[in-house]
Image (cartoon, rainbow over all chains, first blue to last red):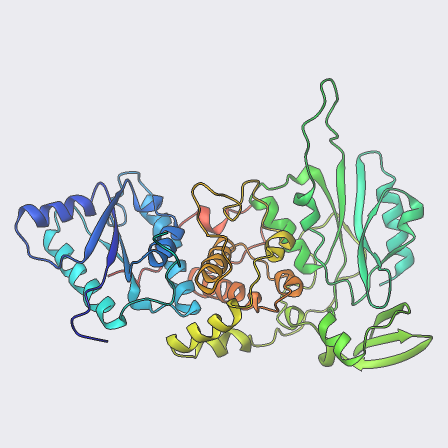
Length: 143
Length: 326
């Protein structure tokens, strides 16, 4: 794939940890790639696996889901459910032939601005290697 | 299996005051055809059969029945539904019970230990469909086809359905009445279909499914026949939000099939009905069996074994695997 391909990445961040972590990265002036479009959700347990499929269909080349570390969930157990579901989704997407580098999940707490930077860099790098994801796009996106 | 005993038991159960009807198998209109039978009296019970052709999973009818609003002053019909089940069907019932899709008091489960079913497609290919009634029986080491009074013995491996080759639970896991002694379980075959795809490169898998899913005509037969697809408000029918577009093209078909496979992850009991009814012959079973295999290996969970257990996607363990997390 061409080296100057800039991937679109949709990131679903939990309100309590990862979103605050990304915010911290911003306020601490940590430089990270600008390819991520952040969508704030209240908890990773709220991320329907079909969000990921839909994001890939509607123009994303990669998807990132990030939430609180296990045990730190604001809602006690939301990220445990998310881990189980999205882990299965990753297996399923891989089996269906979607490059595993297109879907990532991470735990980033509110104080881990630098980890957020690393996660984004890794995601962008992986997605860039995987290339544009044309085969799965929803046709007639703009009517 | 002794058909007389089956019919006798069925007549007795269907005649009970607290049973609305009994669902079983009967001979279809011609050839190898099998039809579901809704039995309310002894006369209808005399038509019931259990043969290697009874592949259909009747557990679907438990949730398929339409519940119309009652006219004022009318009492709801609280009688039970009796259901004949094979091993795989009984797992569907157990899973429905675990999900509270049905209540234990609503069903009478009649267990039929199953020595293995034939694959209807393979059968029709090798011994072409006739208009005359034809029958199949089990013998000690295979099947016997009875046509025009002539009996043809066929080795078991020649016609055995794929789901039965992989079957680990031929005996019903939940039952109220057992019609026969449990059959001896056999060593399940290695699931080569799934392994073969697993071993391909990512692009090869994408190409494989592209070929398969391009044939999908979005008839939703797989959903309709599935005993575990029973949502009143299915995401596939919804327009707002539109989870899956209705247009029939490769990306949408893929999204639909991924969505369906995901909704059955940790729930599919591998009865193979989706694959059987698919008019485009898409190997849907492979998707479901892959998920079942992952969940068995990684999480040590098998659906449809514990009627009282917790559903897979509605539970978690603190030590679930998380090697995929960055």
